[in-house]
Length: 110
Length: 115
Image (cartoon, rainbow over all chains, first blue to last red; front, side, top):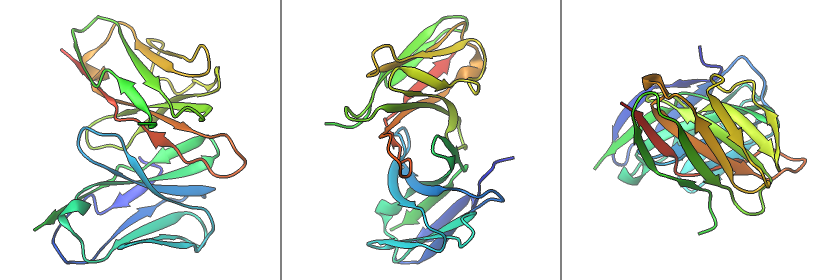
């Protein structure tokens, strides 16, 4: 079993729709990162959240870290085809031990 | 381009052969990580270095896997006597060592196919 559970596993939506993906664990993390990965490429860092309850916004993306630092969500407003990709969350158990979820594969149809 | 680079991008080999992959981290980063990613999964941590010291290797998948970072700059990951189950994407990441949180920046990966 994964330390970090991401849901949904797959998501297919139309351009312009909103969506939220989740990253849950029973473990407490010192920080949590979200990455986006395209086929055949390495993950690209989107954001790092550190403080429980923290909310960060990057244009149409909103990231939230749970109060207990065990879970996180990523909300995308008005999705675009360019948002298509695998969204991975990674939690730091300590400064050197990063654990990844299996990802949410998002497809945004034009 | 000052990002993490990996070479080769693709490697096809026959079962039983040895393979070696190279990773060049971001120049000012003193931490370097190796991960393996199989289809439908997130990256799985293998090992990491701080400068030339390998500080964690217990999660290397077997004794056929070894990694080096001889001068604290580039690193190599070697797999001896490859097996079909070794087929995967091998990712390298680097980060700075500071008191804050650990932001890792990934290379494009090396896709290994073992026939």
